Image (cartoon, rainbow, N blue to C red):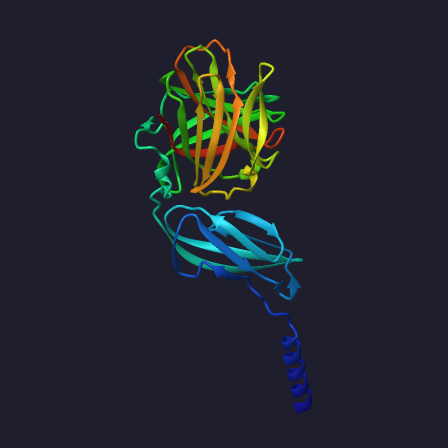
Length: 342
């Protein structure tokens, strides 16, 4: 009887010892209890879960649904959330298993985007338009140069990352990649030759956006409209500039790489574009600065068209072209859109 009891107890110990250990994900950043600023970087890894190889990882915030799920054994994400105390729940999945690690963080209140040290790019004699966000002169329409159809508009103000003075651009409904253009005629001026288009943007889902087009138009003294068209294209994977040929506007890729679909989501990006014109209808694209890094272009193209607009009309355009033929709304948040001219 005692022998049998001892054998049974030993067998139970052996059975327990061969059960697979639960291997919860290892979170390398942020540390548990850390104070962070939004957006913050989340990094984690997991090879196995309950002895089963991990096939995917993801995370959720507090009691919300999963915010991101990715295949593989590593997770890297930029996490944006409101100020305060939060639980980041990191998960790893194997076949019929899930393992979880919770990390507590305190998110500091956001003060909004901070200008990087490129303000020296603005000449001291430049005239500022002031922040054009929130101006009731903005109008949105389907851009007929794109296929299909679109409806969209602007919402102002909205709060993003705890920052309240934000304008939301949206393509709400679209077919066949139809693009939506929002414009504002902000000043009467037919004498200015130099412009810097300066804007902050944040994309909640960059994969939905094929092109982000940031343009200007100016009706010069001869009555023709000078075009300053510029975009980041996921098709060309370049910064693209426009030129006029045969009475139509065309796009050409620069040598500078740009793919809007790869921009970090839920992060403020600072874009500055310097263009100028002469008195013969030629536009020069001098440089573009992205998040404080300046890259030269220095390309001149013919850019004048007789559109019948009023002399001196100076227009800023902000256009979204969806990457999908149809689907989820395309959203871009914008802050401090300012035009400098001299």
